[in-house]
Image (cartoon, rainbow, N blue to C red; front, side, top):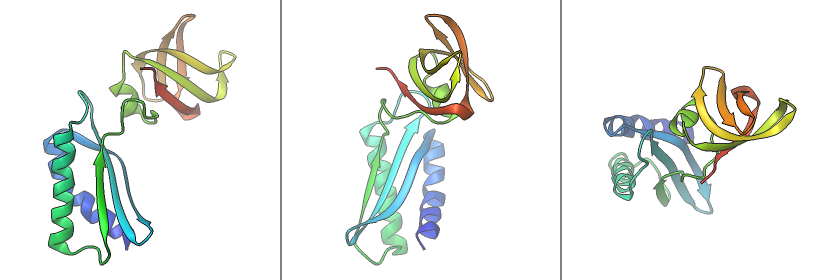
Length: 151
């Protein structure tokens, strides 16, 4: 039931998001006590999300919920930006912060270390190249445990 609801909401808001060059970073529907919670984190490739954009998406989800009467219980809708300090996970995330300083925590050693910090130079199909104080280091995406932009 929740997966069907999640898909229906996503199908409904996807055209609006695409029109505004917004993408869903994370999307969850869950129970908090007796209340259902629809939580959507959205972002743009360049420039970040405004409060107004979050408000528009929030209203669209609320309108859909009312129009289709998709939930029987009380619910809340939370639409927000993931923030600049969110963990980076995907190739798209690394492309978004290209040219910025990121710290990587790895599952395996690269050049003898499990932690590297540097400026993202290139994002390739299977790795991220960063410029560190010791030169260029290629980090395979598959061994990144966590990566965070340094602010």
